[in-house]
Amino acid sequence: MAEAPLIEIRQLTKRFGELTAVDSLDLTVRAGEIYGLLGPNGAGKSTTIRSLMGFVRPTAGHAGLLGGTAHDLALRARVGYVGGDVVLDRGLRAGELLRWYGDLRGGVGRARVGELCERLALDPGRRIGQLSSGNRQKVAIVQAFMHDPDVLVLDEPTAGLDPLLQRSVLQLVRDRRDAGAAVLFSSHLLPEVEDIADRVGILRTGRLVREDTIANLREIARHRLELRFATDLPPGLLDGVDGVAAVEVDGRTAQLVVDGSVAELVRRVAGYGVERIISHDDDLEDIFFTYYQAEEDAR
Image (tube, rainbow, N blue to C red; front, side, top):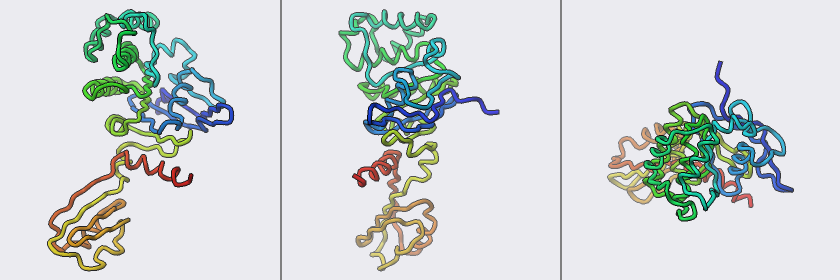
């Protein structure tokens, strides 16, 4: 029997007056899984996360974690959270604030906190008010990871960090996933999600419009191919080829968009002196924007 998911959202709906921010959302994240939540501003990502963390009350449906909800303080102590708008007590030193968080969770070893601060190049002796936005983000990350949580809920966790530190944070996320934690990871950085997530969900105006594994999304991505021939192509050579969605020929060069297998295309051009094939495969960003283009066209 499969274990119950550590994050379970069922028919979650949240309205603010006439605005429906999240609409009948179903989403689960299991132990040992990173789920990437994608969507532009206003798609409902942060509202979903805030509902899961108990900061806003759902209009309908359920947002649960660890078999209960975040309103259970014993369960919340097993969750690591980084919000999209980090607000910290500016009068405290970073180390004092981290010790306070540790006490809330029943105590966290100083060695673990020190290790994370060193890994993220954070000086715990500085006051929060003296820190840059990037360093305040580091404080939020340390407090989310320092107690080795069973669930991580991360809303734009690498915002404001330089590329090297972004890489360090992503490795921290992978380490918790490999230790069996469930991770809900929201980000605007699509290559980042593509790199780290096991599954992704694409939100549009509060609804889940696509959910799949990264591996499956890569399989269905269109292939953008450039074929270069030894001589000019005969007229009509590439007409009616199964799987070819678009063709543009310019002398000895053909630009093609192929859905799925390229087998029929290869058979068609065999014997016509193909000198070079250049692939420009779609990445997750191309697939993501496909779903939003339909929305823009409808406006």
